[in-house]
Image (cartoon, rainbow, N blue to C red; front, side, top):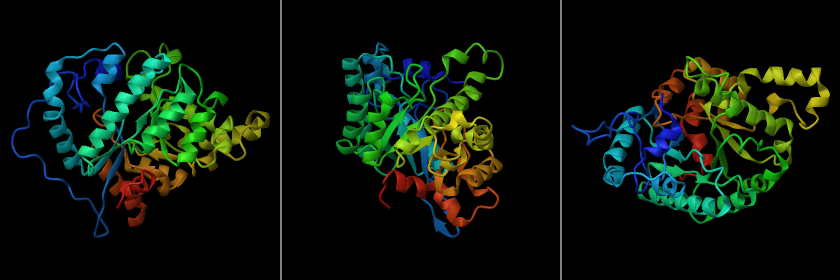
Length: 357
């Protein structure tokens, strides 16, 4: 299983790195033969532009600023085979566009350096999207360890660089993002009407329990962090203080959509513990957004039942080898109307990310 921090350390040295699933084994060479023709996804006789809300890149210049120097030999690959490989996979899977995000590994960085790192990353992301406007949009990076700076970076990312929101982690050095000190960031996100995409970064205090077989740090730990993140936003009142926030969480919302009934009943059993929320936990599911990395058509069906088709968007976690058939999982999901399928495959994301049709 790919380790994300190792992924950063092994990155190339210029521009934005597009990694393939075999990055840690060898560099991807030039493609041989004709690249896959772009798959045309049709629903009810209509062409659907599919948009992947959950796909990753890194910016080597930024990681180098944080003490992770990388080899200049990879510079030619970034605009060559790496891009070719990514487009080939997108074409094969039926993915027309990706919303790119960078997993935050800079939350321990002091303010001045964090400002430099974020500025480099957001500039490079903007350049990439301008170069391939029919394939990419991107989320800004923000230094949430400095909430006031993060609010400024979000506004600059959206207004100056045409980025579509921000990508954040599920906590900041152990602090929950429902804490009052993060309210300036949430206020700015609500004011801008942009999407905040949350991707978990790990729960260090759980590492001992999750050691052993099964890759549990990722397989269980990531959905658990997402569940904790969303639950705090609900029960600590963040979603009521900022009711128009547009938050999309990775990995199908973790365990919350499948177990929101227990959260609801927990408030019946322990009413004093739920005074921070104005509604039942299950009701907030209808104002949150989720990717569909849940691996089966039945899983997608259940997400629709709990959250609504209007709240879902496909995700692949590219280049990490998690979900290569998400388009087909949506197409095969029982009980969905053609309009539901079109919404999940691309229309919801196009609306949220303000992608012109």
